[in-house]
Length: 77
Image 1 (cartoon, rainbow, N blue to C red):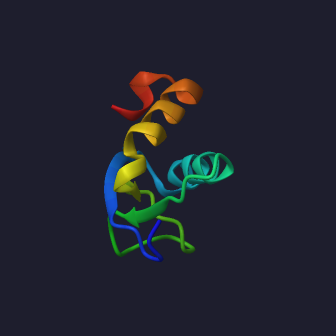
Image 2: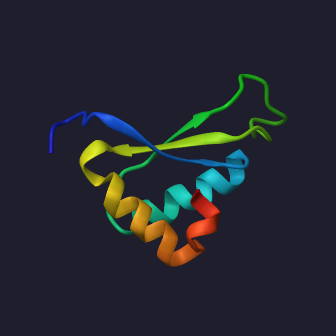
Image 3: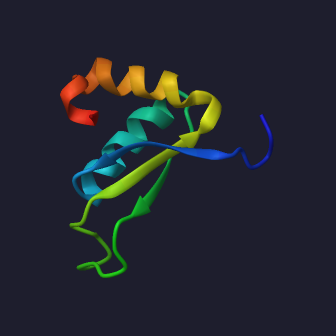
């Protein structure tokens, strides 16, 4: 894997806290994940806006399957 893999969109979490939980789930399984906040304004550093979850493009299918197994397919539509 390159030092900086090309990231691809996985899903959108409803808020930053949920995105961070999903990110930790993926990282725990060895899949790097990056959160892109949906806005620039936040309260105490936590965004209540939807946040995009990005993973290396070659691991999108694996990451999607993992989240669906843990959260159900409706959680990451």
